[in-house]
Image 1 (cartoon, rainbow, N blue to C red):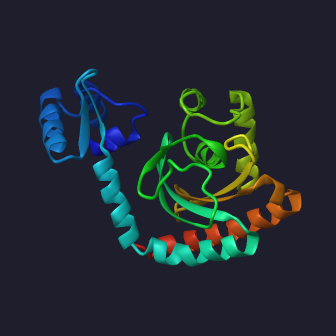
Image 2 (cartoon, helix red, strand yellow; image 1 turned 120 degrees about the vertical axis):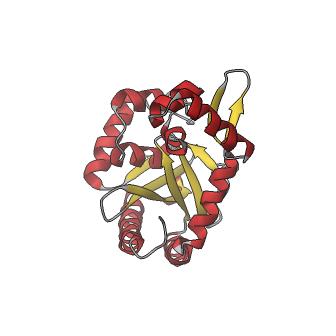
Length: 239
């Protein structure tokens, strides 16, 4: 049931959860009430719908930190930040509509509302393009999700799809000031051994410092770091 709520793009009522989880409505309702009492799901009285609560996302964040992931990723992130003069962010993909920021290094924070251990919406910026490129959402689903996310200068949906196609071919995505004014973002996927999108590495820097040559060098360095993280995933306790 938690998987069903996690995968949903919007809160679900008890009947919707039951259908998604393959359970009888009464059984689903009783389990939902228990999960609500334990703080794992939230309930909206107005719409009578359920959603995964922030509490369970915070538990997931703690589990990911204990897995050893941060111990491996942080030296790579510091090396990237120092070599290229950027801030580097590591995020866990939760769903097509959200990510969880696990760690960041550097001095630039384009969005002060995005904090470690808290989910933030997607698809947004370069990381959102990566989720679309390496995830499994359909075009109608992506269009609906994109309409709900704020950008400084949001691309049209055809423009967004063009960025997705380019990211699939190049293996990375670049956003030059359309998510945050004056900020260039470069994102790369971190894939599991079975090629599932698990994590995203993103570098952020002032656009006036990141010309084509600098972005090229940065994207290559990010891809190398993502490759090292991908190679390490099978050794980590991420299950």
